[in-house]
Image (cartoon, rainbow over all chains, first blue to last red; front, side, top):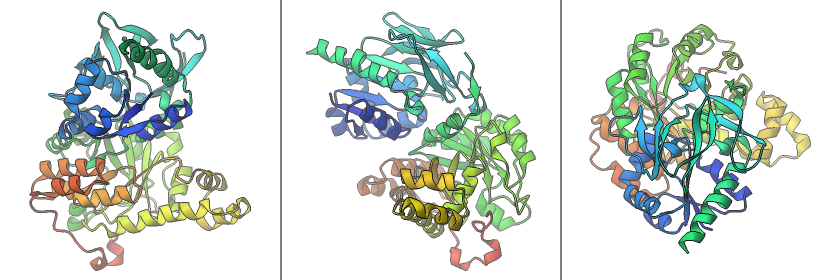
Length: 198
Length: 295
């Protein structure tokens, strides 16, 4: 499977390292031609307003949006979750998202950096083991639409959700050294979605 | 489930999210909005940009809390602010205001000429400047969660940033080439803790994100520093002391992302109007050089 990591801004190299550890050799995506070469995409943590703007300027915005709409498997962490959400609260004026995931997300919902935290949380992939989750000025999911499942919660707010081909977490598994979320994306989301397309 | 705040991972992780981005100095809410609209990953709230501190002289201090709060209210991106070197009470004040990162900065007048702030005792993360690897590791040892190479702030002259970036990365490359039993002496020479020296030698990079700062005034300057191995760029006076701040800010953001693509940098450099006038670092008398503050 050819996986790309959107590399306009953010913690790209962390996602690349984890994907390599999972046996997937990702490419970075900054251009249209690079997007065309991948079957699945990871949107990293970073600043959602910056990434959206750069995607607009470098003609990636509509191509990514339409690939997602056509069923390309995508995983987004933190800023990535915001960029995959159909609706954003506490957004910058006119802030855009690629959308595709029928959720309402609230930016910086847990507060500012002094409120950022890490915690062991349960993640509903069939394992009872807790997963170490790092939340940095993190969003949470305020509402989910039909076809979206909650996989993890903190203080009764969804912090990991999925639809058929999209996975999003408000935390950063790429920072914790735990590869479980990325494996879940590859095995349970991306492979399954791509098989259905074929 | 316990929520642990202010851990090393949370502090250093925040800096990871800024990588590949531009952090811009702003002195009011209006400038902060221009920076956010241009694609800045964060803004640095301060009372006077370095070029003005340099021109006006006097003691430069932490900004007015009202001004910082006005900027926090105006933008959704992270807001950083500067405290004087060693001034832990200014840092406590900034933490209580909820700033997202504190820059313990040589651009302000130092409050303590011996000791830096004990940054481990804070929940908020700190970024500190460094001119060489030893200085960077001493700051990390004190709890800095992010390093920026120092340049000569407020000059628009990139030569100092260049020199310090080469210095830091050159020393890292040298460490990686040493035998393990030579690292003890290397630590002594760098005046840095052995454990950190060993970690850098093994990984071939700092254990925290390394940005660059000081004297960056054009898209090509930003791209130059990225190609020297910076994870991202601070731009101080370079934007709001230029002819067309909004356009220049957006141009620097584009050049930082596509630092390795001269065509993009050329397009970003077109029609930007006047860059900040600038001062040659070589013409600055030594006592007026900010990068030499800190130890």
